[in-house]
Image: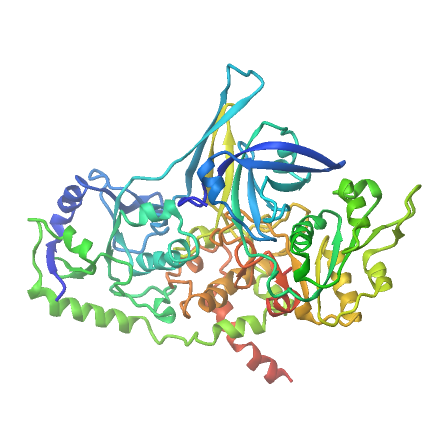
Amino acid sequence: MAQVKFIKKDNVSAWLEELGQKHEVLAPRFEGDSIIFRPYDASKGFFIEREATAPPKKAIFPQSETLLKFSNIKDLENPEKVALDVKENLPDSSWVVFGGRPCDARGFTMFDRVYLNGKHVDAYYKARRENTFFITLACEKGETTCFCNWVGSGPSDPTGSDVLMVPVEGGFFLEAVSDRGASLLDSSLLEDGDSKQAEADKVKVEADKSMGEAQDLSKAPEKLLAVFDNMEHWEEMSAKCLSCGACTYLCPTCYCFNITDESDGISGTRIRSWDNCMSSMFTMEASGHNPRPTKAHRLKNRVGHKFSYYPDLHDGVISCCGCGRCIKSCPVGVDIRQLVLSAIAYEAKEAAND
Amino acid sequence: MTSNPYLPAMATIQEVIEETPNIKTFRVTLNNPEIKKNFSFEPGQVGQLSAFGIGEATFVINSTPTRMDYLQFSVMRTGEVTSKLHTLSAGDQIGVRAPLGNCFPYEAMKGKDIVFVGGGIGMAPLRTLLYYMLDNRDDYGKITLLYGARSPVDMAFSYELPEWMERDDLDTHLTIDSEYEGWEHNVGLIPNVLLDINPPSKNAFAVTCGPPIMIKFTVQALAKLGFKDDQIITTLEKRMKCGIGICGRCNIGGSYVCQDGPVYTYEQLKQLPNEM
């Protein structure tokens, strides 16, 4: 049986400080109107009553990171020649991510299939992934934008987490999901959790009920492909889209990146940064040809990737964790659920029009 | 490749050949003897060249694994990375991440007649396979080469053309788009010249690479000649960054050109979403 504990609400800050002695702790807190994951600072506290505005993606996939450092070295024996020294810059930080939601932790499992289990292992991602622990808070109630239950998950899904916290009277029920999660529960601030198990189970059941009925997306991969070439459909779907990219930057499963060099002349760095498939330059080729010239092309690729190409490559797993941030933060109200459902319903609609 | 797939191997430029006003060929050798000893690739695979401080870009390795004295890359000057690469000369250091991607199905092509149709810089990947086949000549049937460029000055590998023309075991045809003083070969667009050459499609493969518009009409010409979709092979350009199927940029549907390509049969391409 999994190790279970209980922590009083008033003891959480002390626990985070204790965890902070061994690890760096990332926790959500208010900054302006947004709830953002930041290095935990006891004087600023944390806020976990609502899903954070942005996911804790940067813990393992920083918005910008240095891959390599290079410098030119002058050969004094042969003044015309310059040697190059290139060094990799592998990360050594370790994080405890506190207060993310099940969708946030599960999001990284979509990364894992691409970054760790493909033909090549991403050394930078691997170094962070192996040293990052997730203490995840189960949701008591889905928000109107939540649809984790459509994509094979749920408000208390432990997938990707090390410890699952469930809110109960006076504090949190803590359940070790992984062995390394169990190691985080070795603290005198925590009490035995067995007596809270039934209450926690009830919270989970109520949370599941709050999500409403899940839509069946099993046909999404083939249906999206079927409508792929109908540009009229995609132009209609993308009419409102501003190509701002907020959906990608706030998405726990969006993993595309760019690689660029920065140089001060003598030395420099090779940097990886988040990229955005909604940007018109994303696929622009050196010849000037752009295979995705309009926002309609780009939107269908984004939806197609998450709900068709990725599942086809990865055992049917949809590359969307249903967190709903892309819906909540879209300035013009594009709703990815409607995009997918429209594709699924497309043939039926066509048939009805005939 | 090292355990860190983003870390280039350092290489030294041995020779730079000015092919055309905007194409240079770089012959490079890997610096680290251990990496050099263990390095291997197959015809059609690509590599990322680093111009440190500017960035990386993808180029086909257009030398052949049958001649490993150096690795050869031909670079057309089109943007920042290629412009920087064009400033490099013999003795300069360069970063190489290779080999990346898949290769031509040279085993499956054994015993078949081969028709190469190259346009402009698109001759580079064909050159690799051409030399591979010429170095394993008994494994392949009749080899026909049609190479076209806008004008004679735009023709890369011009110093190799006389040898290609003279070889008895290679049927070479050259063409340029319009009349040019002193030009003794074909004049006309590649697909039209291909129809005139009329190579048999039976027991044959066609390999084509060039500008997208050329490929489009070449494929139509090949179809007229009786080539089926699975007998037509091409190699694609895409914007690539990581080169290892992770960064999410060069996909056509579920296929990542940097990893699952750049070599595809026309039959395979037709099964992918229409997003060339």
